Amino acid sequence: MSTMPETLATLLSRHSLGGKHLGEPGPDDAALRLMALAALRAPDHGGLAPFRFKLVRGAARERMATLFETVALAAGKDEAEARIDAERALRPPVTVAVVARIDMGHPIVPAHEQWAAVGGAVANFLNAAHALGFAGKMLSGHKVRQPAIQAAFCDTGETLVGWISLGTPVREPAPGHAKAGAVEVLSDWR
Image (cartoon, rainbow, N blue to C red; front, side, top):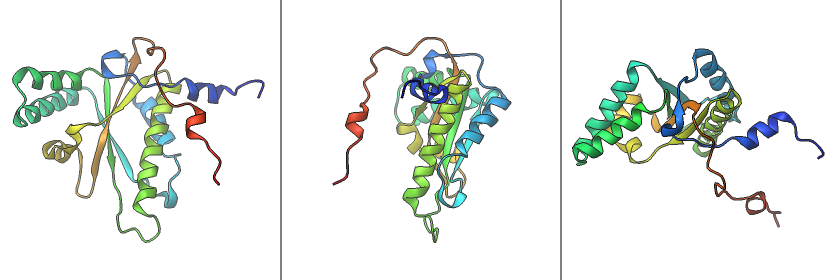
């Protein structure tokens, strides 16, 4: 291929950037709608859309920070460690909770295909954010398994997958981020 299509060049330039490297402005309503529309274009057998995105912005950032701090203290962290959890919640201008709604008994679409749709939706959401000039990172960790945090973000039958931190990049990505190359992930089936 002599020239690379612009869309592919955009996809190949995407990288994750954490909350401490994100600044204002965060994406507005119009940008977030475009990201959601891109997420809905992910492969999704049966069109189930087994995911939801819950926005944490404005005053909700402070409420999430308080929740994270409270849960950290209840889990045995000291006050300084708990405050760090709270501060991490406040860093990105917009945080998007990713919630899965997997129908374990669906007669046609098995759970693993629904989980694949969730992953594809997250990838498309982040790619759209990048194409719009924002940066972000998907985060999870032990917090997604904390019952109080799950209850705050999930309805019955839902699973908290993690959070996408979003904002305007305030620095370039670190050079040489180690990822597998195409040769490590492509092979002929025999």
